[in-house]
Image 1 (spheres, rainbow, N blue to C red):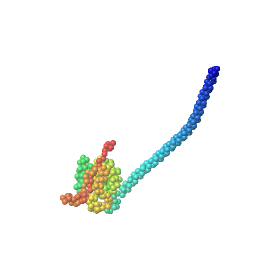
Image 2: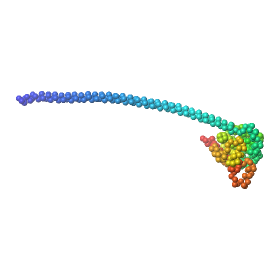
Image 3: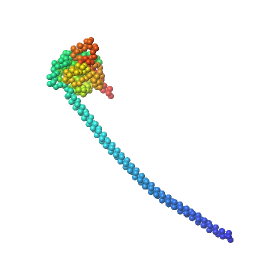
Image 4: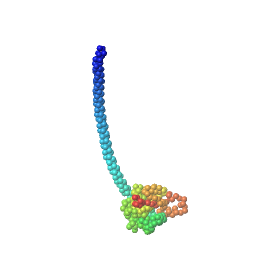
Length: 349
């Protein structure tokens, strides 16, 4: 009987156990659902936070882009202003250069006018034949001094250029003694001076009357073998001297020679007294200074010596007693022969 009762209870127990098991599963599922709901709620909160962060980040990025664009626009504006300023600076530089050139031209013109020799009235009143004979020497004395001092110079140049007749340009030809000396040796001559002296009327076909600086500009290019200045450069200021040296480079032949004679200011008598016998003398040109100027303008010094136009002085210094005398401090004049080598146009390319 008892066994029978247990058999009846077994299904009930099984049902109860199944119910308990199902209840456990249901509770577990409920907990799982609760956890899922909590996770979903948490995820939604995190998504909202992420969306908020993304929105803020996007805003920040947009702000940075705007700042960058603003900076680019500022740089472009600065570049534009710099370009405008640079153009204005260039315009000012061009204007300054133009004005500087114009001022230099005016200065040269003014210097040219200032450097001119005396007026016709002063020349006739002071620079008479007696004056020139007394302080320069008579025409025959000067011609004789050329023969003594410069015959070998001319022969040397002829040999070097392999020519028997040279083209000479004498700037500041004065009474024309140098032109006459050269013509007697069958050379071609041309002179320029402010005045045509009465004693050289016979040479008027070979002399151009006018300002040296002005006349040089109109002379034909590459036309002269030798260009000379005999007691001329000391009448000009240094600006005009440099202007003349620059201009003669155009009119001289290839490898043309330059002959210069000026008062020897190393001689104390010349420097302190004799130089001022001519009130139109302006610039003292010592040997070293003159050499430097010529070198700066591309000339090579070929010869330099001290000599005298005054024949008595020359004869006195030619005696044996002069051997102990330093010519630098005794002779009246300084003579320099230089050469300018001009490049052929074909060599420039």
